[in-house]
Amino acid sequence: MKATDIRTMTADQLDDELAKLKKEQFNLRFQKATGQLENTVRVRQVRRDIARIKTIASQKQASASKA
Image 1 (cartoon, rainbow, N blue to C red):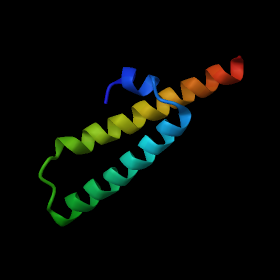
Image 2 (cartoon, rainbow, N blue to C red; image 1 turned 135 degrees about the horizontal axis):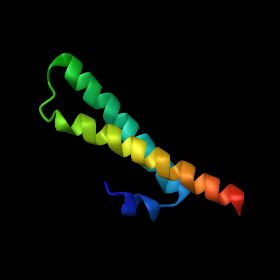
Image 3 (tube, rainbow, N blue to C red; image 1 turned 30 degrees about the horizontal axis):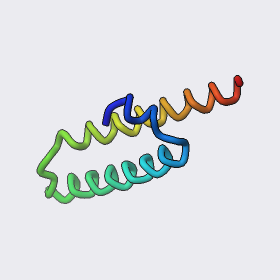
């Protein structure tokens, strides 16, 4: 997911996407623990997408509180 895509989302959409990614992260961790994980790169992608969403959400919140 690209940062430009995330910046166009509303706060509710960001929360929904964050919840979806957290659930996927949990499933990936579970697959890794049981030895069923095939795409190991996806773990890193999901972790970085979560960080990207949290960063942009906090930036939006900070700019909203300034205004």
